[in-house]
Image 1 (tube, protein in one colour):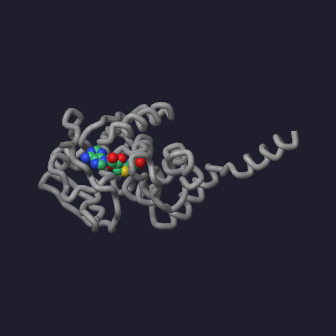
Image 2: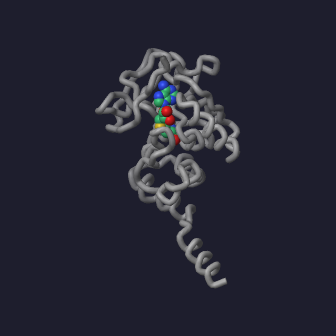
Length: 223
Ligand code: SAH
């Protein structure tokens, strides 16, 4: 009996209050660094990031850093997720393409802001597990596909926004082509040194703006 009580009291005292941690993450890492879009802030407060990382990392899920997910990949730092999402300026009617599903966390954030999210992951195990996770959490306007995101997703193009969460050496031309006129793409580009780039497409062409240096896993190609 005593043992059970000790177990219960220690186990409840070490289970973090994730809602409180999430609120603190948003205040200290996201709003404090200048993310102002209220719908992005709301989405970051809503999505339960700890459910997107392996169990042993759950208590660290709201920290100011990326975390490992299976297959040697990473879930991006919360601030980078918020910044990239804000840069996309997503509207409720938008159809968004994501390259690099990973855990599905970025897709879940986008799903709260957009009409639909199409996301491509090249590692089969990750595509399957994130699809299951998004499904069980009720993010039902997200469609996951396993494949090489370099090529985009022609059947569903054009996209109002494209977000790439792995770094190619150059902006893939199929993605530029599949971006709608008036749409935006946020993409890390480079090898060891990478820069986050905001691409805007209008009726006369493409404009590119460098945002900040970043470090993403490389975009791998299907052979
Ligand atoms: N957005 C993710 C984090 C992505 S990590 C999240 O919120 O958790 C980058 C992911 O891109 C990895 O899962 C990696 O397997 C994937 N990736 C790398 N090259 C790719 C490609 N060519 N097409 C699709 N996905 C790719």
